[in-house]
Amino acid sequence: MSEIKTMKAIVVKEYKDWKSQSFAPVEVEKPKLETGQLLIKAKAAALNPIDPMVMAGLLKGAGWDQPSPYVPGYDVSGVVEAIGEGVEGFKVGDEVFSVNWSLDVGQQMGCHNDNAGDQKKGPIAGTFAEYCVLPANKVSKKNSKVSFEQAAAVALVGTTAYQSLKAVGVGKESKVLILGGSGAVGYLGCQLAKSMGAYVATTASARTMEYVKTTGADKIINYRETKWEECEDLKGIDAVFDSIGENGGFEKAKKIVKEGGSFVSISNPDAGHSPTAHKEFKYASFFCLKNSVEVQDKLMGMLANETLKINIEKTFPFTKDGVTEAFTGQTAGKAMGKYVITF
View (spheres, one colour):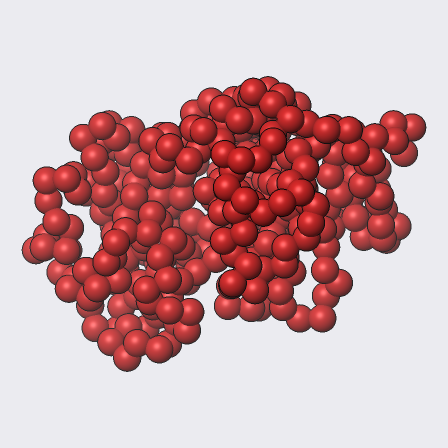
């Protein structure tokens, strides 16, 4: 193990609005490696909409653990620095990536702490730092053809998109509407649904229209000009995937989704949390991802063979000004791509 005993990290000491947080990296002790874990020297970490929500304390009511103080951040890519006892399949120097989220052990949805089964709880968040420790069973290897920035950017949003599409049964010859084709999840979701053999419709604005066309979506609706729930050619659609939390999205979906069809939202809880609670739907629920190495590996393979694209909107240095600028951009909601911190 490296002789370096400390590292720089962003430390949240109080749950409050991100604008009131200090994003100056501070010197802290390096995390201690435990059985079954990997110590990763970070190369890149991506921001996600969930980051400012968690640090503001908005998920406390949902039962999410709230350690204090804590290091925020869920997506990371880097190099294996040290290997804990009992870990197989990795060696020092391996290039890896992961989303540090609850491990998929069959629960309906995940959260940022391990929330199902009798597994030992792993560290929460922790990727906005020069080093982090992660359970090895949450970590995937990075292909050398894929940059560290791309690897860090794809884990959370890619896993979310893939699992959401699978939850609503998207596959060959199915027909799906993805709300928010220019957002990170929607952009990947359109590509993944096409790769599954589906007909894909999505929404965009005039500003993002050309960008969304690069997903290969079959139909792109300018939501400022057309109400998607009134599109005759979408009546009887198999599924609606709300990737942006559109206001009234579930009620609108009822107008076009076929009897026994499906609806999923990752940003609006109007459908509730029980997938079978709505008799007119086969599946209708809010959804939150679960860490899956299998999915991460699939996403990495697609990035490597260029059948999946992820756009890096901008990279930022791991400094107070850099991280503050990254959060400013993330929360503005105008990005066509991911914001990534580099170390």
